[in-house]
Image (cartoon, rainbow, N blue to C red; front, side, top):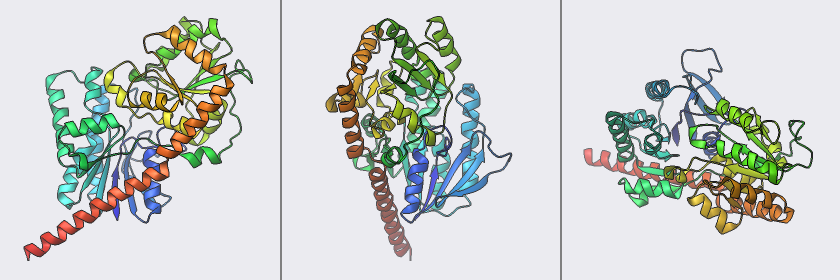
Length: 415
């Protein structure tokens, strides 16, 4: 089978970012499929103005040079989205394919996929990572009625023309069904654990700030510092922790639109480079040592209900690394934590209580060991990347096979 795999915000493992697309693509290639990844070169790693190809682990990667980063103004990001629509169509229109797999957001990526599906008469499988346009509406990025109407129309077109929808959380799956997609045409394939990745890499300990002692417990936040991430919550907990357990250190690893503001807040609250530290992003391939050194992996979001359906990659990396997790939001991940005793669910509105929870947990080595062991078991049993890739492949083969049978029947009737 030849798979045309669309995802705009693609990164390779040696870069900083989410590698779900790459990991699934290389597994699909290992099953014998021809995989064409159609992606953006968002950092313009090569000085080229036209699309170009690279090859890796059996995948053909078609790069479309489109500058993009999450610090860009909203309008410029919209322009980048539509540049990808046009560029991906031009690239994919020259390729043969048996199935289109398009991952969102951005939802605009589905436009080129739908047109190509009609032209080439091949099915679409749609992956929904976040519910759009619910999130930009909730955060005020989409405000005027026309923009909201247009976004809703694109969403409707995407669902109506997809043969199957892959959702990254139970809440997203339910929402997709509420929008008219039949339950039998949806599947749950959340973000997943690279068990072997963390198991095989016993990397040398990365160099940490000198203020972090060899035995100091570390609470690690590895991710984007953006509007939706609510990183100010971590800064405030660090301030509360100074009087409770000053030996506990908080490390924020990442970049984003809100980073400078968070650094300034940390200065104002007197925690910057005392018990809270900002580190520059590092490639996924180098992150193992920092997870190994950390005691607790923290995931935060602003307190908005649409975000409860999220499936943050760092949560599943923590499971793979046998580390307890802490989150400050409700939803399916909170239920997973509480049912399996693999971490902490913090109150998003009570900084002092959350600081006490973390302090108490990190001063109990037996709790840390037990929660970490259970976290790995949950990751291995339910979220192993290899197992979920096999599930995704079965969906593809079922849909492509059914589509081929329908086309063959159509040709016979036509004669």
